Image (cartoon, rainbow, N blue to C red; front, side, top):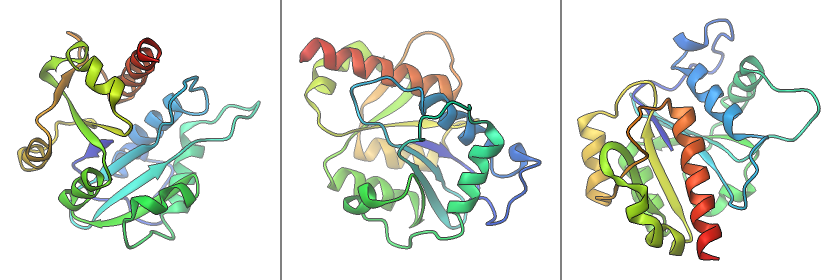
Length: 200
C-alpha cells in the first residue's frame, strides 16, 4: 500500500501532466514495475491511498500479459476510466470480485487501516528507522495476509503515521539505501518470496 498525501485525482484528469495530477505518474510507475512481469508465487494486490479531503483508494490486482508493453500513459488511462465508477463502501471480502482497476471511497484513512486489521492482515510499515526485514522472517513466513505500507514521493504525515503505528508497531527497514516507492515494492515482494521459499 502506497500512501500519497494528495487529494484523489479529478475524474477526467489530463493525461498530459501526470505529475501534476495527484502524482498519478508515481502510481503508474509502481503498477508497471509490478505487473505483468511479476514472477512470484505470492498473490500481490496494489493499493494507492490518497488521504486528502475525500480519501480514496485505488486497488489494482494485475495486468494481462501481452506482447506489446504498457506505458505510463496507458496505465493512467486505466486509472482514469476506473475513477468514473468508484465503489462507495469498502468491503475487502468483495475485492476479489472487482475489476483489475477499482476505486473506493474510504471516508478516511484510518477506516481503511482498521478494515485491513479486522480482516486479518498483519501491517508492516516500511521505514528507514525500522528493524531489518530479516528480524521478521519467521513472522512473515507464518502470516497468511500481509500489508506493507510505504510513502509515495513524500513522507507519510505525522497524523497518518500515528494511525499506522497504533495498529501495528512493526517498522521494517529494507537496507541502508533509500529507494523509490516502485523499487521498495519490488524489493519487498522479492524478500517475501524468498522467505516463503525458505519456510515451505
